[in-house]
Amino acid sequence: MSKKNLIVLIPILMMGAAITGVFFGHQAAKVGSRSVGNFMSTPQQYMQNPNSKLGTIVDIIEQQYVDVVDLDSITELVIPELLKHLDPHSIYIPARNLAQVNNELKSNFGGIGVQFTIREDTVNIVSVISGGPASKLGVLPGDKIIKVNGYDFVGKKISNEVVMDSLRGEFGSKVNVTLLRNHDEEINIDIIRGVIPMYSVDVSYMLNDSVGYLRIDRFAEKTYEEMMTGIAKLRSMHCTKLVVDLRGNSGGLLDVVIKMCNEFLPANALIVYTEGAHQSREETRANGLGTCQDLGVVVLIDEYSASASEIFAGAMQDNDRGIIIGRRSFGKGLVQTQMELFDQSALRLTIARYHTPSGRCIQRPYSDGVDDYYEDTYKRYSSGELFNADSVKVDENQSYTTIGGRVVFGGGGIIPDIFVPRDTTIASNYLIALRTKNVIYNFSLDYADKHRNDNIGKMNNEQLINFLKHANLMSEIEAYAAKKGVVYTKTIKNDEKKYILTEARALIGRNLRDNEVFYPILNEADDVVMKALEVINSGETVLNVR
Image 1 (cartoon, rainbow, N blue to C red):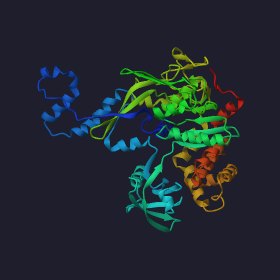
Image 2: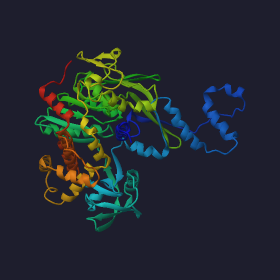
Image 3: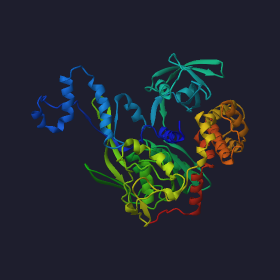
Image 4: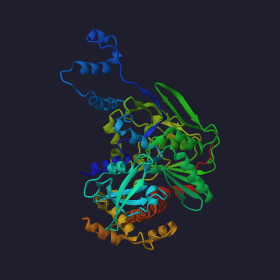
């Protein structure tokens, strides 16, 4: 695989098949079965009702085609092709995929309460949710799942989807799991599935004595409540300024992000407005009751921050409520509504464009087709935009002003107030080789398993963070990599070494604990977070500018 293809593929896989997007939190009435009235057999009769052309053609095929055809299969192929000619975010969801797609925006599911990874065709349990069904039965991190309901999970190409489909199910239902512990002890247990939370706020912790950090992964049903819980925790630790990290956040529910913006904005401040050919302009304004109006705010975005993330960043920027730091966001300004069809499939249709308070529509162009639209990440890479602020192209004809008179630009994505380039270290040949063979991740998992029951594994979060920050693991990582066929023939550069060590230490922390250890280690070597801390400590925020 060429480097160009690799560069494009990794972010696309991280983002999923398509950006999650923003859509209204309601479903239209279910559509009944198609009916075009009496079949019209002549062109003259057909021309009298041209709006029914597509349905009529389907009926003609069904009634007169030379062979019996499976019209359901044909329809499943035709609908996505039809939607491709509208915009990149109007999609058809087959019935078999609807539950999984809807689960992306839910905050819980029925399951056993474990996080796992697949290594060498074996399902390894990385962590166990405290108080969950598996935890109550003594399942431990490091256990390997070798059978589920008698189905052999070892020695086969087991995918994440197969594992999740096997372990998830209705609340109260039973699943039989066979575990392998310490390489030789088999444990067979029946687990009653319970309600397992899916958190969208990854972590909240203090960067220093006054600055809190909140990382939001997506905008789901309970994200607002999770955010408020995280901020309450930070306030208890004397937080007066807040870094909101939306990097990699591809969007979610519109009503949720509106509630979140409302907490930071003064009365009557415009949050967002939507408008479409069949949707009149609809404005949403803050009610003035937000509890976070006193907090200084910095928002972090990157090229994968999309949709609801851009609504939040745009509202903070246009109201001069916070500084935006990072790189130009994805540029997704289309609003979808989801309509369930008669066969339990669904249509997620774009019905409006959203605009930031200054009037910007930040949807980037898609007139050259879907494939070109999603190649934008590579275009930004090859143009140098991800590495140099001067390479960020702005449309001078789409200039707008914030409440305080600052100039901002539309035309595609939120352009940050302060640009921080992407780390070029991650594109080095050595690091690409380490990632291709999952060396850093697998080393971290093995290290965690090795020390899970000794003094390292028994440390509290603060002790573990301090230990890992100073642990010199480079020689062990190099030796581990060499066994996997990744050998560095020259001296490893300092920036590469720093990146490798930081990632390994952070992953070990997460494998032994959770994100409360992972992010404090990772962020200390994160240029964007460090720039945010520098800016917010200097007093450069635009808090309460009017």
